[in-house]
Image 1 (cartoon, rainbow, N blue to C red):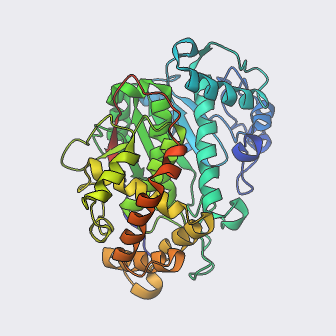
Image 2 (cartoon, rainbow, N blue to C red):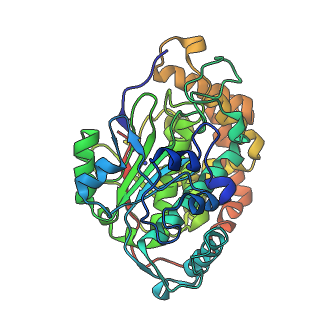
Length: 437
């Protein structure tokens, strides 16, 4: 058995937020004296109210092997981060109050709908409130993270009961689903959103051994969680709630893809990028997402209407060939048009249906040690070729490129555009993403 060393990855309600069967109930935690602190005004930290709202708790809980919420509070100051534990996530959220009176109509309507859903399980929430306090914003992000998780489960066609208990290795064949109950990971996904980057950097220096200067996706190590951490002041428009929502969703999809069937190797970056863009653009297309390459700043163009760009690239035979893009291991080679093309190619593959997409992900993340022994990138690429062939019927990159170009020419990208075209242009430029390594 092997495991990759820790490294940075460059980022429903009751039924969805509730505790899993593998973990002690809130009542059991209360009986043992380890229940959450009474800091949340909407649940008062009471076990019954947390459980009714679908939460596993509100801290204290572990984040990594050697630290947890109490250590982080002691480091950056107690009361800054709102701690929440859902069915699949452990979250620390520090966001300022949000005035819905200055939000655009589309964002305001979306948030009102989310607040109504939350109020159904937390009656203390007023869905018509004008100002969202930090705890209410934390509850919104808990809901959004769980909905992103449910969306990924819908694509892979697997629900919680399909995945094994933590670190229970029963088989290493086509039915093997990983090392634990969280899409194949043994620990819940961790999301930390800091208001100030200085707090994030103090945390990362102390507990991750890294001076992080931009958003990061990070593997906490064997038997632990995949994490995403960010701060509002890394980029100016992250103070916009919709931009932050897209930002978080983009990196969650990367971690879901890598965590599916266990994080034993990374999913090819073109697919993660394209699928994550598709998810973020369904929230709002006006906030395109760019990851930060290892050696330079990301391309931060504000151009969001990508369908005409795709048509132009195809018409002039200027798109990066799939045979080249498919071999990339990280975001180092990516430029603006590569983001556009990766998104469009995945949108094309998504037209083949969820069953085909699920088959691709299942084949792509099959355990490599069966046929290759030690893992290497050549083995990953060979597995990618098989996954594309078995899931979509493409025998080689040229065949896929030809079919994609025909789809762009016939459809004009309309099916992709229709899902994202009704949002309003933002007032600020898009943010830069965290590095893959």
